[in-house]
Structure formats: structure tokens, C-alpha cells
Image 1: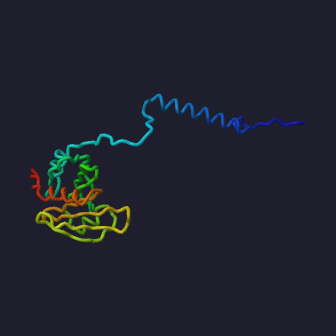
Image 2: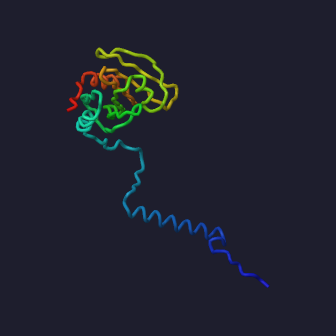
Image 3: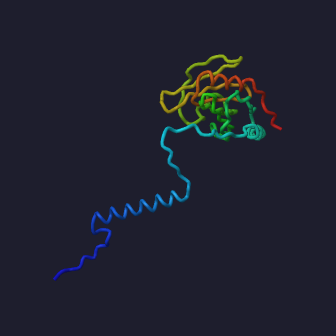
Amino acid sequence: MRVADNRPRIFQGSRDIILSLIVTGIVMVGAVGFTGMCSFNPGAPEQGQIPQVDASTFISMEARGMEFAVREPETPEGWVTNSARRARVDDTPAPVIGYITRDTGYLQMTQTGEAVQDAVEGYDGRWRDFSESFELDGETVEIFTSEASDVRDLRVVDLGDARVMVSGAATDEEFDELLSAIIAAEPIPSE
């Protein structure tokens, strides 16, 4: 006497599994293609449109809420201000503005009222050691570096009423260009 095989059909053979996967794949491609939310562009990637933000409005609102002097440096010619947000440095609020440079480098300026060492330690929780300093437009710029390859250098200027930190991926000339603009900027009135 023979007993009937009660296994589900999906477990009856590899051919059935392969056919089920093919049908599922076709349904997925059809559904995603129908939405129009994806595209296929063979070839090398191209530089897209860089988003721009109104840093002036952001920084003027931030100046009213901070207990330290906040500055809006003049954006160097050919640069794009592409981000503006509030971060935390050593558990205190700090305005952050990001720039795309002429040569598609990226620099990020963070302003804080914390002391230099506290600001560096509280920047992103990554350890950096003092590396060197140099004079720029009458101010001392301190550079803090890390031996870790995924930690970017931090350049700090103590302006007395605030500390400004600049980090990113750009040339030394672009760092200096932004730092000079920061040093030249007057504090925004807080009222």
C-alpha cells in the first residue's frame, strides 16, 4: 500500500523553485519600472546639481539663540553653500555651514563658545592631537590631527568671543581662503 506525498508543491523540485523565482523577479522589475522612480544610465557618473541653502537666514537665526558671537563669513567666489544645520559640540549647540569649493572640495565650518580643547574633544568624539599652528591674517590657526585614516584634520581659530573649527576635504589654499573670510567677518548682532 502506497502513502500519498503530502509535501507542498514548492518542495517538489528545484525546477519549480527556479520558475517561482523568475516569475517573482519579473513582477518586481515590472512594478518598480512602472513607478518611474529608477533609471538605468550606463557610463561614468556625472556631477549633478549641487544643492544650495540660504545660510544667511539660518546663521542670523542661530546668532539670536547662541551665547557666543556668531559670524557669517563672505562665501568665496565660485563656492556654493550647500548645507546649514545645528550640531552639538561638547553638549552645547553649534551652528554648522558646509561649502562646496570651486574645485569640488568640501569644507565645513562649526562655531562654538567652548574653549579650544573642549571644542576639539567634543567635535565628533574622535581623538585628535595638536599638530601645528600658523599665523593667518593676525590670528593663530591651530591644526589638530589623528593617526586614524578615517578622522579628518581640524583647524581651529580662537577669535576670543568664539571658536571656529573647519574640517573637510580640500586644499590648504581653500582652507586658508575660508579661514581668512571667517577672521574678516564681524559678529552678527544677537538682537
